[in-house]
Length: 160
Image 1 (cartoon, rainbow, N blue to C red):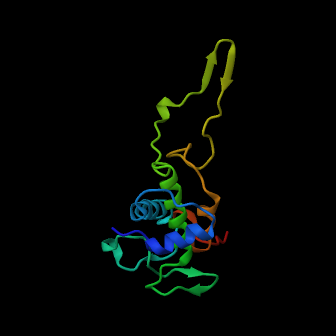
Image 2: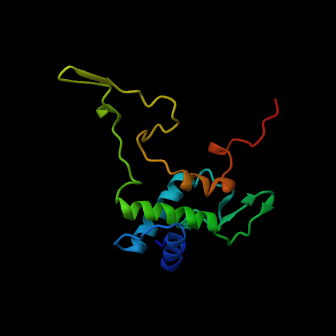
Image 3: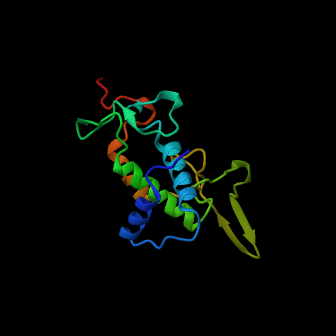
């Protein structure tokens, strides 16, 4: 599997963002960043993968639109590539950051040590039922935003 973009594009993105590229294999970081973007947004992206189930990445897509314009079915939007670069950078800085494992049964609700007591809030309505402690990057969230349709295939507008 190949990550979105290429190593030169990642290096240029990192430099423009003021990031110092950490040591490590850029290609492996790009791969992990792309997997994160696909896993997080695939079902929310508009349209369907152009190559169907045989396609290894979520993009290119058929039927995707942005700001009222239909995107070419062979296009991988720069926003998707840049989001994968940002995710790759975070993953290279702190390996494993984007692959949080969460066990709800091991969550601490209250802790008391030598007269000091702390109570923690429940994950509650954060919307992230799978890994409530997973990091959120506003940069990554913002980049693909124009390409995202309603969550879970709901219509954009409901007439009641």
